[in-house]
Amino acid sequence: MFLTNVLLKKVKTKLVLTLCESVVSGHRLFIPRERAAEKFEFIRYDPFVRAEVVYKEVKRLKGIAPRKF
Image (cartoon, rainbow, N blue to C red; front, top):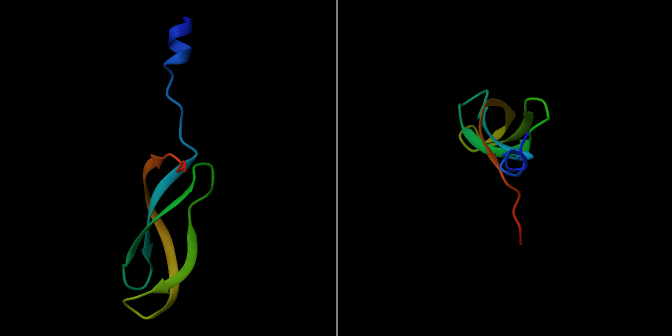
């Protein structure tokens, strides 16, 4: 293996942007999560129903780099 191949290797990001959808109304949110974590399932306020409902992860969209301030 050449040294240039090691230097040019792409590094995977630690965070992944996911699309989560409400089980009740279909309202969608984009939320970052760790790449190694399991699929998201959480409770959050849904503005269409005006109540707290369960959101489930629909699909992973892309890797995102953490912000540097």
